Amino acid sequence: MKKSEHLGDLIEIRADYIKDFNEENLFELLRFRRKPLILTMRKSDEGGLFKGSLRERQKLFIKALELGIDYIDIEFSCGEDFVYELISLRGNSKIICSYHNFQKTPSLREMEELYGRINSLKPDIVKIVTYGNSINDNFIHFELLKDKENLVSFSMGLRGQISRILSPKYGSLFTYGSLSSDKKTAEGQITVKELIETYNVHFLDKNTKILGVIGGHAENSLSKYMHNRNFKEENLNYIYVPFKTEHEELPLFMDNFRKFNFAGSAVTIPHKVDIINYLDCVEDTAGKIGAVNTVVNNHGTLTGYNTDCPGAMKALEKKIDLHGKICLVFGAGGAARAICYGLKQKGAKIIISNRTMEKAENLAKELSVEFCPYKDINKYDCNIIINTTSVGMYPHVDDTIAEKDFLRGKTVFDIVYRPMITRMLKDAQEVNSLIIEGCEMLLYQGIEQYKLWTGKYPSEKIMRHMLKKQLEGE
Ligand code: NAP
Image 1 (cartoon, rainbow, N blue to C red):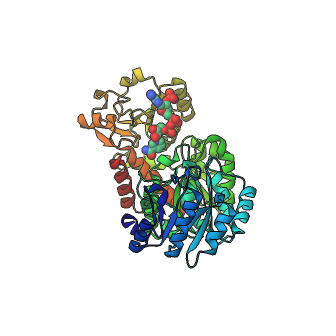
Image 2: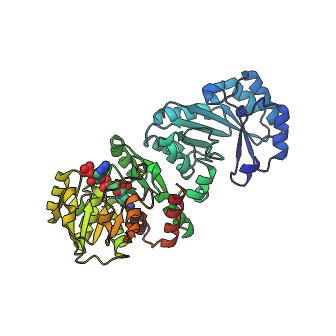
Image 3: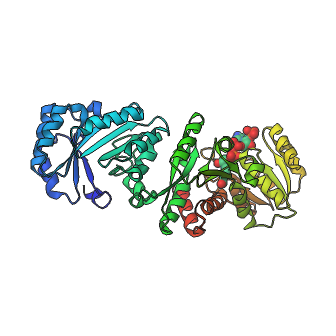
């Protein structure tokens, strides 16, 4: 309780996690509380550890009400008589009547019906928590919350995480966070510290504009740290969250994106190309590159942009003038397309080399530039070497795409940013070459996105600090 006092606005005591919890403990808890307390005791099929009988639980709850507890949380599944009796004894305390489904999120119609049944018992608060099997399950909670004043509603699990963060915007009375990452009481729960420091949840209201990153592993993205910190510093009512979305979930997610009027998004692997099918228009550069990493919602019109290209150019041009330089680009995937397009515009000469030569050849032909197999790269006296493959990325941190000696006297840019200094960059430093880190590209593509979403220029200093802090801590 002491550790939670300065973090939470309410503190939930999971009495079922306390060994031999008894009336004496209750008395102590209430005597030392500094914030309102919710007393909860769940048995195993309700996701808890309580082993006693229903009667024993009832006795403890009645005692808590006598002592003036702030809230008790009782399961709807305990039966209407159980719930009625406690409601009749509540005095000044408040009763939360909750429903949990650990398998799935039922349909909106079923959830509405469930809410009606629980609410008819007249608890102070109805709580409906379900398991999120898809990003789209979160929207069922957002719909359910509409026009209800006594509801707490969200999904559990990693795929349900956005409703834990965003439900207060849609009217949920509160949300839950764990005290520390090793003390989570439900799957997908995030810490209170993260809710407050990363997501600024105290500032969420119904006008908060929603942004996020759409990706298969969106939860690993670092952009939430740089964007949310800037929104806070600049007093902008935006929030940026991870939209963990699988390929087959994308069509419905994009319908929901429009329906809930999300302000925009970043887009990452594997959706950078597919996303184009769900947009109203694509800006010229993104169209030519054939990949979108940013979506802006302008009064219902969704436009796609590519900020990987200007982000990479900015990272390079801070260190070197590109015009007339010979650039060897390793890789022929999405990032390579964006970077080669930018290099060409800057008047650089490009040679593309890739593991799958056919892809290097296709991209080279499309851009009217050269290509060559790995074994022939020594033929070129290049000024700049760029790695756009995932070689060297965590956990394969000892891998590199080029021999150390080949890097001598060149400018070496590795767009891999986990780790911050890759094996290739370490080798380049050892032969006194100029290096450019991948997180510089991440930073500048993020700055371009921020400008597109908000129309404002963010603090580069804050964004760089937030990125480096995260990467150094990994
Ligand atoms: P992608 O479209 O999947 O392309 C992956 C590229 O890496 C392909 O050229 C692939 O070659 C090559 N590759 C993968 N594994 C390889 C291996 N073991 N040996 C040799 N080549 C290999 O991915 P992407 O979107 O371009 O992203 C590539 C990397 O850039 C990722 O690590 C990503 O995190 C990073 N990235 C960084 C930023 C930034 O802001 N710093 C931005 C975007 C991407 P094949 O064609 O032969 O498969």
